Image 1 (cartoon, rainbow, N blue to C red):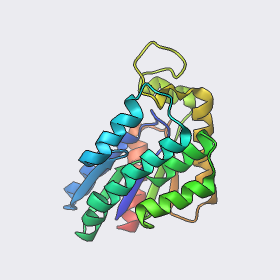
Image 2: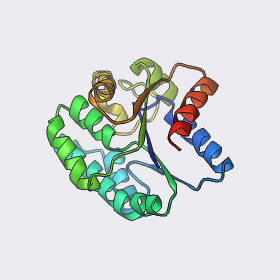
Image 3: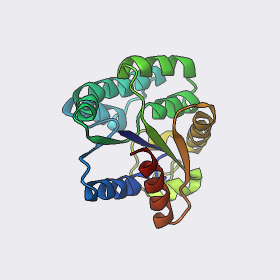
Image 4: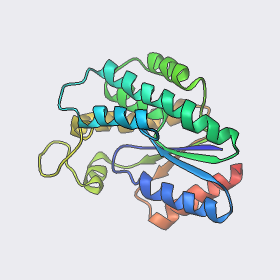
Length: 206
C-alpha cells in the first residue's frame, strides 16, 4: 500500500505521519517512511538545491528538479518497497507539483500531470490525505511568517501568502476533480481526532 500526505507547509502532516507509522508497525506491518524531495542520496541533494538556493529559480526549473528527485525516489526506493510488500508512507508526492507549481506558480496543470506520469512511470498512491489549514495558521505553526524576516524560512516558504493561498486552493481543486482515493482532513481538528480519522480510513483499505 502506498499512502501520501499533502498540504501546505505547517499543516501538521508530519505529526500524523509518525502516528500512522507507529500504529501500523504495532500491527506488524513493515513501513517505509519517506519525504519529498528526498529519501535517497541524489534526491536529498536536489532537495538542498531547491530549498537552500539563494538564486531566483525559474518555475519550470523548479518543477523539473522536484520531479527529477521524484523519479529517483520511485525507482530506487518506493517501487522496491511496494514490491517487497511494505507499506510506503510519503510526505508529499505528485499532488505537490500540481498544487505548488501548477496552482501556485501558474504552470500548465496538464503539462505537470504529464511530467509526473513520466517521472513516476504511472505510479499513483492508494490513499492520499490532504491537510487543509488556513495560510495564516499554517505559517504560525511552521514558525515563520512568509513575508517577514523574524525566523529563518527556506526558499519555498519565502514565496508569500498569496502563493500559499493559491496552493491551498489548488489542493482542494485536486481533491474535487480527482477520482483517486483523496481525503481532505481539517487540520484544525484535535490531534487525536485527526489520528482516528486517518487510521479509520487506512484500515478500510488494508
